Amino acid sequence: MILDVVKVLVPAIITFAIGIAIAPILARFLYKHKMWKKTARNDGLGDKNGTPIFNKLHKEREVSTPRMGGIIIWASVLFAIFLIWFVSLMFPSDISEKFNFLSRNQTWLPFFTLIAASLVGLIDDILQVRGKGGYVAGGLSLWKRILVVLSIGAVGGWWFYFKLDTSSIAIPFDGFLDIGWLFIPFFMLVMLALFSSGIIDGIDGLSGGVMASIFAAYAGIAFFNNQIDLAAFSAALVGGILAFLWFNIPPARFYMSETGMLGLTTTLTVVAFLTKEVFLLPLIAFPLTITTLSDILQICSKKWRGKKIFLIAPIHHHFEAKGWPPYKVTMRYWVISVIFAVFGMIIALIS
Image (tube, rainbow, N blue to C red):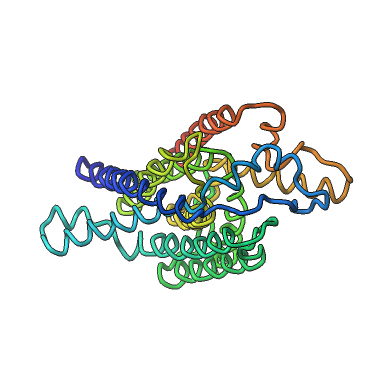
């Protein structure tokens, strides 16, 4: 038991240390090469009038703060996994083998998803900083990103169904529901829904604090499910996210952007399904849920009612527009995130 706890906590410490070490190097590179948008967003999603409120709030920072800070997260996890694997290979022993958490049935898929999606996000970020503005700012179009997410989701769903022989999901307090081959499209749908929540990366420190709480909750759930390798992997992500957050608190040195959020949201989908607690995902990831819903409600209201519900969507920008300082929005989101993550974890453990 004690050794399992150590196995989960050590990767978090390693990824945090690696992230802290590489962040200044990355920051110097990003600033030297001016890796930020050259023109602020000027067209709103579903809004022909553009984004005047957003530009008032964020225009200056958007064209002077580098993107691609998410590299810290997946790079630190990549280095940590390689380091622990290399040690177990070069110095074989019961202890070194115990600490190697790269396993076929628990961590191969989330690790592959993290790296694949993060690299796609990195490509999108590079295209954006070389673009000429607009909602996508020269990056991959929304439909191309959706296609990528669905493709990753299809591979992930196929792996679950055919390789891991998984076709059921847990219903809180009601056992398991076997959905057969529908597991694959359901998996793809959940991944797409989480992808849409990536818009939470809009205020300094916001996305990092929220994602750290969510992955910490799933690390706890995986641990009590005796999925120790998965718990260690999730904890490693938390360490990487906290290292990023160290440099992302106001004023942010860089933004997480697509290379961070795309990797994290797709990986979160895999982790949620591996623990079979996907139905608790909207609760554990409540800030992501309300972020996506606020955007959907805003778009639908403008289309069907001809007027907005929020001053600006997603809702965290609405609070800014109401006069809340960005740090107040961020810190209150952190509090809410921790509360709902703990609440969801408790339900997962007692159900």
